[in-house]
Amino acid sequence: MQNKRWIVLIILAMMSCKNNQNSDIAEANTQEKSVQQIPFDWEGANLYFLLTDRFNNGDTSNDINFDRTKETGKLRGFEGGDIKGITQKINEGYFTDLGINAIWMTPIVEQIHGGTDEGTGVTYGFHGYWTKDWTNIDPNYGTKEDLHELVKAAHNKGIRVVLDAVINHTGPVTEKDPVWPEDWVRTSPQCKYDNYENTVTCTLVKNLPDIKTDSNENVEIPPQLVEKWKAEGRYEQEVKELDEFFERTGHPRAPRFYIMKWLTDYITEFGIDGYRADTVKHTEAYVWEEFKKECDYAFAQYKMNNPDRVLDNNDFYLVGEVYNYGISGGKMFDYGDKKVNYYDDMFTEQINFEFKWNAKESNYETLFKRYSHILNNELNGFGILNYLSSHDDGSPFDPSRERPFETANKLLLSPGTSQVYYGDESARSLVIEGAQGDATLRSFMNWEAVSSDAKTKKILNHWQKLGKFREHHPAIGAGTHQMITQEPYLFYRSYQQGNFKDLVVVGLDLPKGKKLIDVSKIFEEGDKLYDAYSGLEATVKNGKIAIDSEFNIVLIERY
Image (cartoon, rainbow, N blue to C red; front, side, top):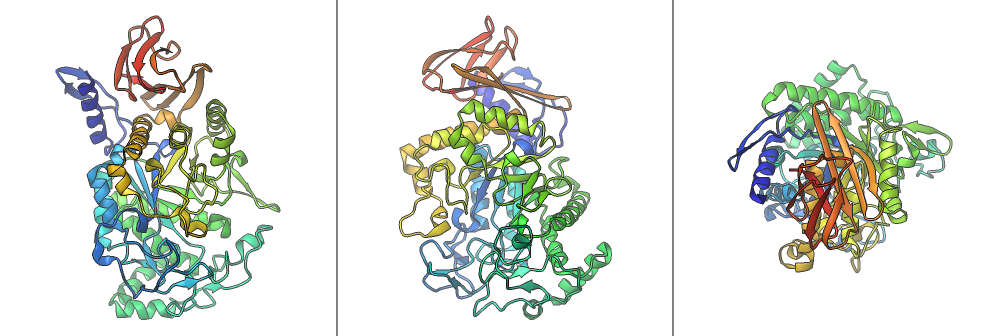
């Protein structure tokens, strides 16, 4: 009987690339089953966040470019990860096995050629946030052909692709990377972060030129880009496209609109599904309204021009990094002297910096109940992106990876979108000897442990089971939570979109061995149910099902 279950799941995975509608699945192991298509909902997605340079090296020939050969500080140089490496893992089914249905990659645009040294050793722009040219992919990451292949491979697996948008700043100034013209950037004052103006109209840190996103003055293309594009033989084409963009939009030729044009090109050319916006609170709020309009237009154009490549009817996904935003604020972020709503007309979701503290301080029920209430009330129609570790948060939930199972339970079973940071699922340590600052969070993915270490495999297996359950059931992240019993701890989630209904029961911290699970509030007498964690089937009798497994967790769905 278990084989029949996997056949159904395989068919569902194949169907996830189609538009939202009810479908019939033909005979599975001689028995016909009518299965509704699972709608994709960003509010309950399972998103994987990776540093492009640190995930997987698929092409060693592009490891060194622009003479980036100086000895760097620990984990502060390029280490070979690239777009081809990500595509390789997509095709191998690594993300599919994890139940991942969206991948967010750090910026892939061309980075400054030189390095900086701020007391931590030479640092190159391996992380992607030090832009030199928004119109080009950095050769350390790969080529445009590589990105086309990645998006195609991901979409074939029903996985969305989210890139990272930087509008706030250029890369630092080095001997190889001159400062942009003064009508493009400011180089002072440095932000004090004590009010709105001192957070927006300033440079984030020393030697990180701030784009004048407040300017509406017409500016020329920076001379270093003119020289670069001419040397690359594409100056005329870039100018032609810019002329067409400004004629269509009527926008002034101000710095922010150049960048918006360059960023939205990745939507129309490659068909990416979303952007994570960097340093949101360090630009004027209206910038993000303008950016959303241009992204929506570009996405609509892509869908119109590529109807055979459209995954579903979802809008373009925008998630904002408003540093220190938390779900407690509802729609508002407080600068101290001013509150700003970054949701309406701007972002689908915001990164929830509060989640790791809530996870530390709360038991499962307190955490789940609170998040379900806020998401179905103050934030109804919008979402949050929860994380427990990240690339620049120096206080992760479990830096030494001593609680990987609890991390998975709280992240993957909480209402909201889950952000799996690369290596969460394999207990990649976030404490690296000799690494300073955020470099300790950015070691290369621990593939050797994934393939050969028994403990790592056990942890990965747990993340895979929970991740696939979340992927198959939008009720987990986007539904409504209700506790069934406190001891043993059982809850159910419910979700409805059109004719699609989703009901699941989850039990945590249960006794090992035989377990009687009360499902009377959700399922009917005689219903055949399935525990996706143990792979066991059960039939509802007197409102309960019996599961005899070695595990202390159950993930119950209708068979």
